[in-house]
Image (cartoon, rainbow, N blue to C red; front, top):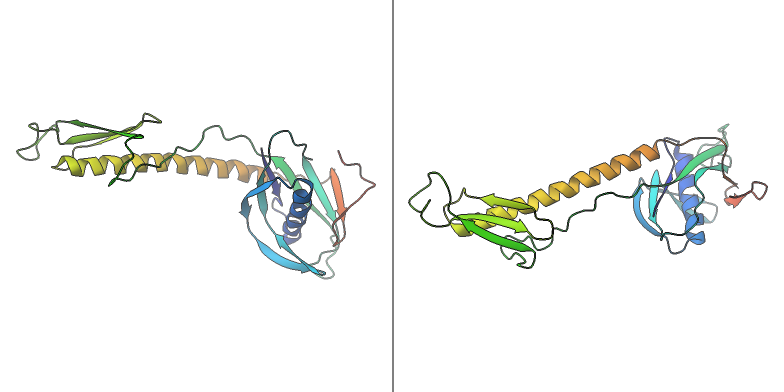
Length: 219
């Protein structure tokens, strides 16, 4: 599963709280893998340096119990002296599963395609284009065997050139598909990032040491 730790639209202190909570989370879940970060700047707190983030995403094996919801850090601002506010909030969410996976675009080198993944079909090119058209099979269709996607080319006069063009178009088709998935995933993560609810925290941490408040029962 993918766990997002987000500062929402909070100020820099909330981003610092994301970095502090990330340290806490990784100690509690050492098998968690950091797979995505947004923002990133450092600040020295006492004797240690903390990296602050707008949000981070970690990948954690299924079956782990993760505290979800609002987390409060109660601490005078270490960034702005004499600032009246001392409570900063972040949010912990489980990101939705990616419904559609990216397509593998390996083996799509036009100069040396992987024949285990790409099937090349030839056919006679329709229309005008020289004496070879409609007489020899200069048209080429490249079929991506794992997905069934295919692209053709008849614009060139030679079979070799059409083969390269067909494979290039097939690679572009798959890369465009993957780019669309990336944009959708980023959109989903951004929506959760902006949905931070302040108040009623599930966990409270205090001070620059980021110590858990034992008076608040952790679920």
